[in-house]
Amino acid sequence: MNGELQRTHLYDWHKQHGDLVPFGGWEMPVRYSDIREEHMAVRNSVGLFDTSHMTRYVISGSQAVDFLQRVTTNNVRKLAINGGHYSTCLNEKGGVRDDLMLYRIGEAEFIWVTNAANGPKIHAHLLNHAKDYDVTITDRSRDIVMIAVQGPNAMPLLSKMAGKQIDYGRFTCNPVRLAGYDTYLCRTGYTGEDGGEILLLDTPYGDEGNAKAIGFWEEILREGDEFGIHPCGLGARDSTRLEAGFVLYGHELNEETSPIEAAIPYAVKLKVEPHYIGYDTVYRHKKEGVSKKRIGFVMIDRGIPREEYPILLDGTQIGVTTSGGLSPVLKTGIGMGYVPPDTVKEGDIIEIDIKGRIRKAKVKKWPFYDPDEYGATRSQ
Image (cartoon, rainbow, N blue to C red; front, side, top):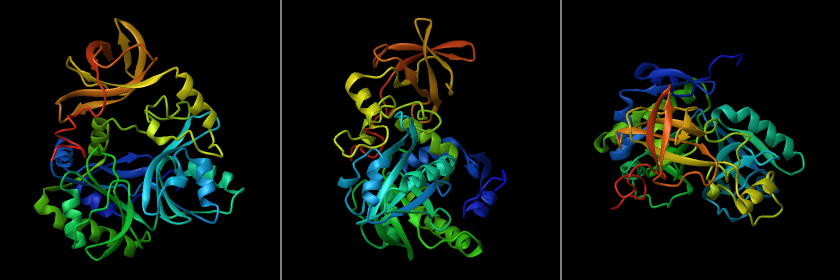
């Protein structure tokens, strides 16, 4: 678009109600009210996110499974119809081109959801490798709207909209009619909470499709009023994923970092043949170890960590932060970063250089919140 920011189907609603910022080539809402308020709505009730800026491909054909087994790292052959899983797409050296969600909606038909800024790169990568397979790759981003409903009240809300109890398990993707709209309900998310990511079908970008998308968005807000719903922007999306310890491309993930270094081993499988692109590096890192590892930390001293701050141990720099911010649940700073393996373990005290001020922090496993009180696995 000649450098112009792209806009989702819901742009007109966001412009009227939210604060817009550039993000990954898109003009997106960073917040509608207070980011902490939106964050806690996700943790305590339900939050609504526009995720239509992400890229959605439909991949189909007689060799779709073989193709996806080659270009992704999870085991596609074990993915049931109406199932989904988290995966990565690697370069030849085992670095992460992108992380993704893959949903199987038919015997030989899949939906690949990839990060907004990486869409063109991944599209070129897929087309390059598709030449060897009977497979078709179709970009459906502009005619399928994507909306996330996240929080402990998300599924009661969606069940109300469906007019029936929705009992699909996590990591599934099923056709569901919500308040009269045809959708796929993907039981996934990026906040650590329960809920779903909705693919609203038949919404071509333009006046008619945009009006349909806004109508659906507003219907969710109306139906969700009794559940304490809040529309949420990019600020709460980032703070909730950080509290959950989830990686973000361009921060924890890049083309020089393997999934094993990033501590997302659940995204890769080793017993798959033929081997996927980057397999040898993943196998070596899994069996022989890595030169860096991702850690999490909680601030002890005052100060909010951000990306690219030095991580120190006894005054000597050992690594650098990749993400950081204020945890609304803990009411203190939290962050993630990379250090050499075997330098620190959970509970160790490290220091973060926050703009020249050395502040103590404690190494902690994610999620940073108590999973018995928050998150999809909270105690009932």
